[in-house]
Image (cartoon, rainbow, N blue to C red; front, side, top):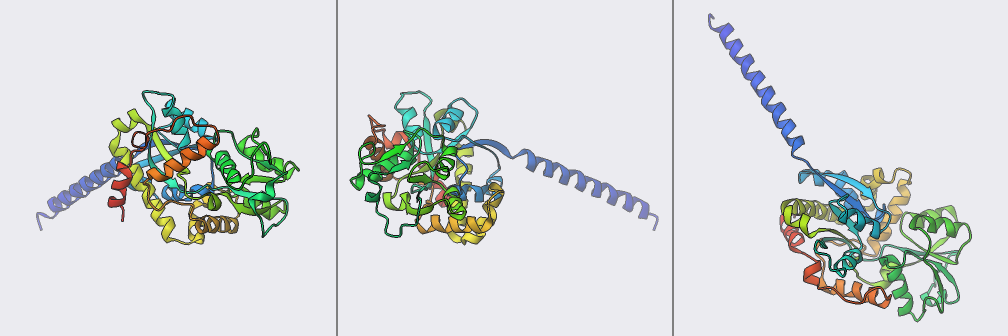
Length: 338
């Protein structure tokens, strides 16, 4: 019994050591998170796998804290990247193609693809279950920014159906991305090309009706992807790999879960949206196969994008796929994440 005080003292010391060590480990785990400044082109449910990856903690699992900003345009996202305001850009690959064709030394390299179809829908004034693209002849469509993938894909699709923009149909391209829905609601145009949830919101308000999916009718295209500068990639290969692994986790989760489950995960990014509306939108994107199941970009799909750009008169010279795209991280992510 004499040794009891000593034993108690020793036990207390051990408990204190355990508490201190545990606190240190907790502090270390927090410090290990690396902040990545990610600039997305716009806020849209079209990018659901990304929001799922953030909300489910997939990036944190990879040691990454995402600092998310919205550029409101691929050109602005690329400007944020090349100026150092962002570490990674998320927009249409056309932004990276433009930079590469400027012969910049520290150009942008695409390393992961998220969407594989155009995510916009054509909204008309009234319901038209028998809609054909030829119906737009003699009409006015509110489109997107000249040189952006949404506008180029829309024009490519119209031409595929024998409708020539500027001749057979007037396409308005001088409005800000955020102003197109309001302009249509105010009476401008016969049709408007919109992303979700804006298209479905107009339907809900009784302002218009979705008559066609641009993505479904235009085919597979590397619509939105992640890119970073050549120098950032060379300095941070592990970070790019961890980021890509998290993206792929998001892709797989979205593939394996229902629209209702996905809606609950993305709702924090759309606080003003109705959850039932989100479910409707997500089902629409699932139905057209909008989301890539892997982060790998194919040469065939990039060729199609460049053909779209060329047809729109926005591309003089095609870029080398192997220079613009680095699939190494995406291919490894498929092996890492099951």
